Image 1 (cartoon, rainbow, N blue to C red):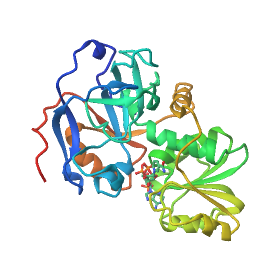
Image 2 (cartoon, rainbow, N blue to C red):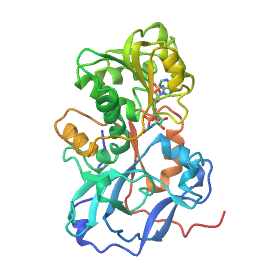
Image 3 (cartoon, helix red, strand yellow):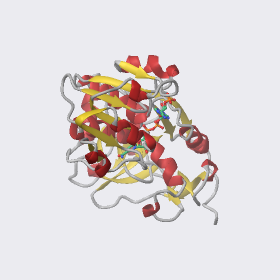
Length: 335
Ligand SMILES: NC(=O)c1ccc[n+]([C@@H]2O[C@H](COP(=O)([O-])OP(=O)(O)OC[C@H]3O[C@@H](n4cnc5c(N)ncnc54)[C@H](OP(=O)(O)O)[C@@H]3O)[C@@H](O)[C@H]2O)c1
């Protein structure tokens, strides 16, 4: 279920303001370090499109950036946010998009903002069957799920997969994609999430708080581990000889050597050979084969609450930030 947000081709005809609202951190820390401020509007870089963002989503990874666990991004101030759905207001001449096009995409940092300049290659035409809230929930989570299921696992009809955190952002999409490819799907989640998992097509939901998943799942072809830590090591016990463990969490808890010693394979989900995964995601969504679930929306000024919610680890599907017309407070202040 998604909420309506403003946004249409009319954005392309409206002059972009000189100052824009953005959700920034001025130092690393707890959710309260997120503030909505006014910043100069970014200018479109070469090969980019300038996009009026209508919605962004919260990915668990962004809470790690906020905490300073991804130091390669450099020091604050940083505008956070990786997913976007919006409208092109200035396009690359002769490029893939035109002003007025509705797009969705991934820009690793900077999408909690009214405007962002994004490489054209990181954008795709938005699905038409979901609004900007639904589209903003998709990019990182759906690309990760698609690459895991279709490329790394290359799941085939009749194969069996265990998906950890199957009710979460990546997991609820991966479960649908696995079922779509004809696999038999086990999924871990608390009992309260089991009706949701069954609606996604999960064949056997497992309440990890009540049973050790290793006592239920044996000899699967693939485990997609979206939890990490000790789940990585324990998941090796569920695989058939030669089976594949895919890790996605920052701390996967297992190495290729660990898996090799056990006669299993381990790969960390990073990078893809797929040319335009978001085009594939859009087509699946518009064909009704992939449905995104948005648990709730927050406004830009509610970013601290949205991040605190994400950090509970209890989200059903996705959380989305709507970028509408609220007041913002002044410039970033020194730490
Ligand atoms: N490598 C990549 O390219 C990549 C890309 C995207 C995400 N990631 C990583 O993948 C992980 C998942 O991301 P996400 O955005 O999908 O997370 P998320 O939406 O925050 O996951 C929330 C879900 O986790 C479930 N959960 C929490 N603890 C669990 C446990 N011990 N066992 C099973 N389920 C549990 C919860 O279900 P219950 O309430 O039922 O417990 C909840 O539905 C994160 O570590 C993220 O950083 C990696």
